[in-house]
Image 1 (cartoon, rainbow, N blue to C red):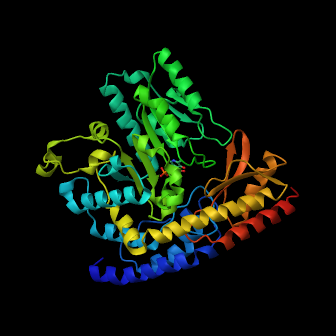
Image 2 (image 1 turned 180 degrees about the vertical axis):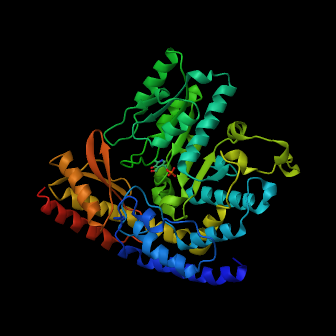
Image 3 (image 1 turned 90 degrees about the horizontal axis):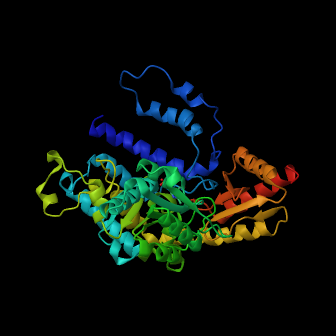
Length: 462
Ligand code: PLP
């Protein structure tokens, strides 16, 4: 493709993407294709050359879009949001168009330095502690950020003489599965992840943590890592980070705070409580790519002290050496697992410069206020019970008559194609999880969801 051909195809595709966003609410939220259907439609010998962009667009419309779950739909209430603000999509396009690989400062100084700039902007915008200034990096996913935290924590413990085969880690049962996965990748099997009890609001109990740590020390284990969560996946519980850090500090245990979706709410002054205690942790992450609107992938990850992270991940063969690095320039490849890195800062920079933080704050405030309304609607209907507090923008509720009817209702909501929610289990009780975070979700969409739920509850005779 020549630059001229790119120009005209690009205009067409920008139109196509703009149309998709404008009309995304008209699609079934979840695809109803059968397994193998998309493949069968697109299978065949690989092309030998030269098709027109119009043919690709036709296939996008006919075969790809019907096979999508529409994460940008205003009726998407499953998992967590994956907002792709169009300003951010433009930044991503520039990143692709520039085609640079910014693994070292010297491989494109602007990639590194803009990343440091936007990470420091995020410290200011989220009201994070000063020790994070200059100590942030954009990771692909929260899972990768947590893995890096585990690797840094392990390095710090081993560096101070711990036996790596005796290291043990802690989280509540509500922590995300990426904790166990990160530990496993770091050579720490699931049996060495202690699951700490939680209170009625599904938040970790610091006294229980202290007791388990004390027993582990007596038994000859070396506690090295605690993952606290600000906004757990199943019910958006907030672990008491200040109390957890107080338990960990005397034992030099690394505290990691996973605030994947919820942390970004700190863009609003009155919601800064979501990150309470963050000034006491060793590492912290929140996703740009969930609620905030930075198109996937973008995880903001900070460490209070970069030394253990760099010790764990730096590797310096001759071909990666540079005078700049020798004189102290940041090489972000040493802050992550892979070598290569995209110019992700651009999509944050575009979002913040074009839209600014204010519309994001308004969206977050609306979602939080509307979630409280839905919470009231659910509580006013005797057929349902709210299973966990609605702290921010996630509701978990169940059908009072039991797990079977709850499961049936989730199935019926999702089969309708009009909305998408996620089932979960909280202390062995099945629950319906409604995430309110889509950039195009308005109060009217939640009213429609509630009408749908009530209608289906009638139909199912709940
Ligand atoms: N941590 C929490 C609390 C989450 O809710 C999630 C996603 O559900 C993750 C981590 C994983 O996020 P990512 O997909 O960015 O790895």
